[in-house]
Length: 114
Image (cartoon, rainbow, N blue to C red; front, side):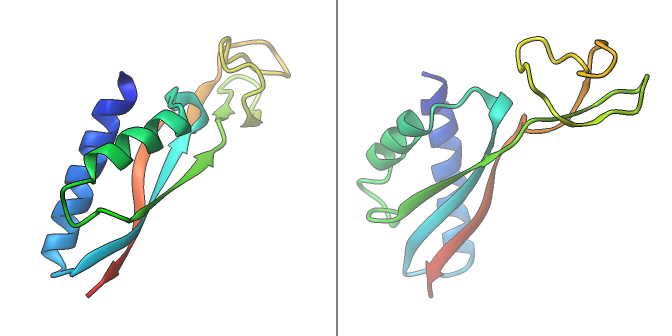
């Protein structure tokens, strides 16, 4: 249940942010999830909905934006999409790419009622 721990951290961060900003309620929470983060959006949304039942996030909308996986080759200079996310090899020279985007999960923004 990888998504449960992610949702728990997300909800705790959103609650702390809402309280720090004296929010009456949270309308929406937007999250960026990288293609390589191995997150199932449906499971994350399900866990989020369960965790917000008894707090000021209840009724808020979770928006998940997917961040494409991008790699960079230090050998040939390729910089672009990672086509084979399991091999992470450069499409030009075949060497391993350095991942520069698409691996993280972060809270991007929140819509609050103050």
